[in-house]
Length: 203
Image (tube, rainbow, N blue to C red; front, side, top):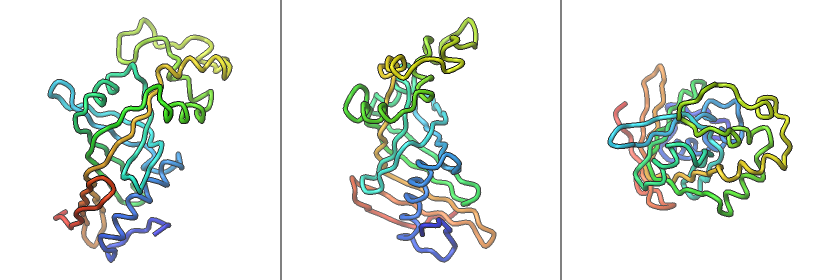
């Protein structure tokens, strides 16, 4: 299953394993379709969605990771303890994976420090922007140092104050596969590390 060529003949166990393998691969490959992940939250009773980069996957722990800014409304949404939803899709693999769970927020802790240390200076620009994300701005232009990446690695360290690692604990995973012989759909439920159900669904 390492080539991720899921077919109509594969069983539930193989599909469940392949879903995690596809996401694990995508977290390491920026060209993979599933490298971009949609995150859904609820704010004041209304749904909110946005796209993030899939930064890590723990198949054993049933968790996925991404990074965000503590000044964003998403940080507040996901700090509330309310359920979240995630979606990844790869057209070439013809697979969509939807997940439900909750978030563990890492801000200024050891995991956050470890991930920040591995973040390249040019990738830190988002966390150095002076304005609060989502609030009105007088201009779309960035300060010169941010626009041309002329700041040093040491100067970028101040961005750590805004850097957040989101650890998403997955309770449910829904796989949808488009195929000319007939679409396939399967659902998997988890309690902690344990797989508690695997079943086919009508597609």
